[in-house]
Length: 359
Image 1 (cartoon, rainbow, N blue to C red):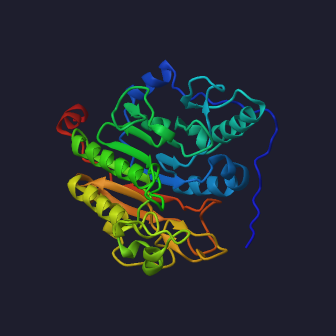
Image 2 (cartoon, helix red, strand yellow):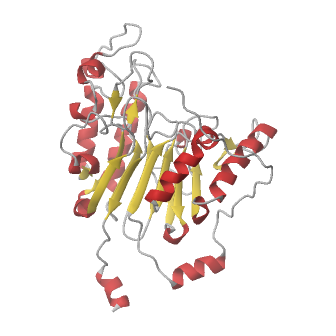
Image 3 (cartoon, rainbow, N blue to C red):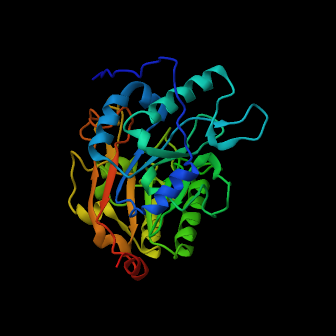
């Protein structure tokens, strides 16, 4: 069913928002310390620019209603700054051609208007219109540090802009766009995903200073309950190819190999799948975050591959974790093939040091 959306007006008077706080703003935030964020949203936009052009009024209405403190975006699909042949700047949007300037203008104008004027954005982008992530945080909840890699190295970005790590006072937030497993045993397929899962596990095992919230398109459905048609996805293949390892057979994101590695990450990292922690039963209508094309063999076939995963220390603070898309017509997907997922935590208990300051 074809849907129509009101495009963003092109008035040519875009105003670039100030993406970094001034000293006076920083001072005022220090004078009035805020508690850490408690409302989070993650969404694979499947081209952030495309959704701004076609679905922005609908999406901004959703943002206004939910009022998240932090918005994690995957598949931004905007190229990093840097002219041809020159080093790229993955923290900035490309603007050295007329078309890239126009596209950047559209995005910056959208993010400077309500409700996004109260937020600051960080980008981690690929060299081309591929992958990429963004983190949009309310200015009153600014993180202490932001990294763009799993090694916590200043200014380094993961390939394809797949990671943004924000450190707040009492926890860390990791926004990732996991690489797709692929269908075949090739250089950029199974080995790439195995390497990614290994690095993610190592990160969690070394990440012990603050509890962690991990969100994003993790490109894996952990259990059979997390897909609409387990038999279909288990037997899926492309061009008749059957991998030599049976654990690699099936739909990328639902192979036994990926699912077992993900389960091991949760176990070894002492992590809780927030949605499944609250929702024990299968929900065929609203329990999946990705939906196949309404036309073709994937019609009605759905997977839960977008997550909020939290450290065990935070599980008692989970108030809600919901998916906001329904049905094979992709209602609530805002133009993407993924729907937004939200997490709400209760307020954390202040540390003894904070209690002494406020007593």
